[in-house]
Image (cartoon, rainbow, N blue to C red; front, side):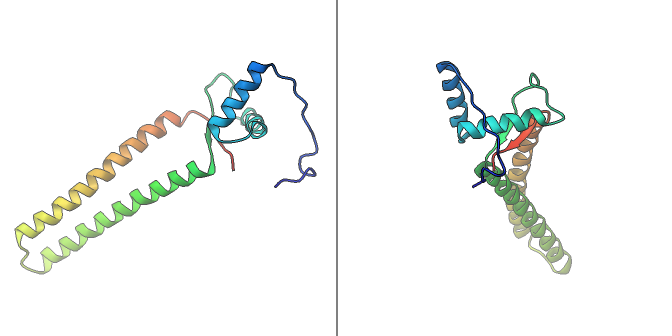
Length: 140
């Protein structure tokens, strides 16, 4: 917990019922307190590349950031496993008389894995292109 020494200033704010409801609703949507939402907004307007009319910021909480990191790691692991399987198969074909049916079976598995990786990367590329012009804020 942050002590009052690091945040010595206090903000007293009067809101209408509608404004308070809107603040509470927005904080709930981000999974944070109303106070933390106000702090996020302060950080947002201090970013050099932001403009209040440029679009809403993207807010990442710890759980979301962890999930993104986990999924990127899983995609990378699957990609590495697929490439390793291809290299192993190529080495086996070079060093011995490989059965074409076995080679085709391995290629089908690798193809399925690589198709999944390609689809995941395509979705990630689309998501990043949508978000790239918006500022990002982290709640943790």
